[in-house]
Length: 213
Figure 1 (cartoon, rainbow, N blue to C red):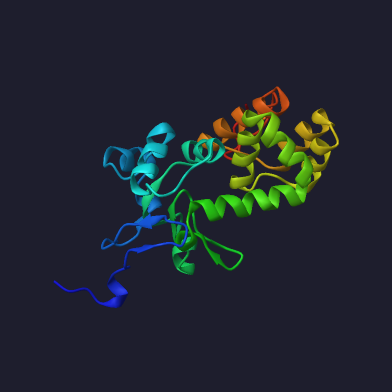
Figure 2 (figure 1 turned 60 degrees about the vertical axis):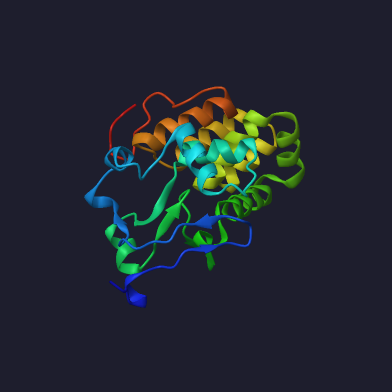
């Protein structure tokens, strides 16, 4: 059976060597499933399994330890999906390591390394190139944690400035006051908080679903 242009997405290889498989199924609707079900179906991968699956699909991409850390935390879903009904209505697809279109760039086509590097560039703008480069050189674990927060979009100018000024307690308080987290995201962010600030979730913190930590 032949498929029309509207019924298929052709596979391609990006300019950085990241290969996307040919897609013939419609995008996954995340509100009709969950990551546990997708994992059982062999479609979604988390932790080291995500890193292994990404490497298997993209053998020409050389990952740094920080990039592997981000993939392990973000997870890897090779098939395209709509995160919610609002994004489906707008035609916003996500694929791979949480890649989507952002600020006019199609990170599905450009590949995960391009999405990662743009987030690191944004991190350097907020915290200073010299500091970020120094952390990358001298403390790989902290750099991985910063990279993960940057990839999620959780590095904001105010707490980033406090951190770059060495005011870790102020940075910690501003970080947790700035945004509410819930579910798996809370566990992920708490782990990074422990690495960066030496402490995790503040007592009494309310999660995105209204629960108190």
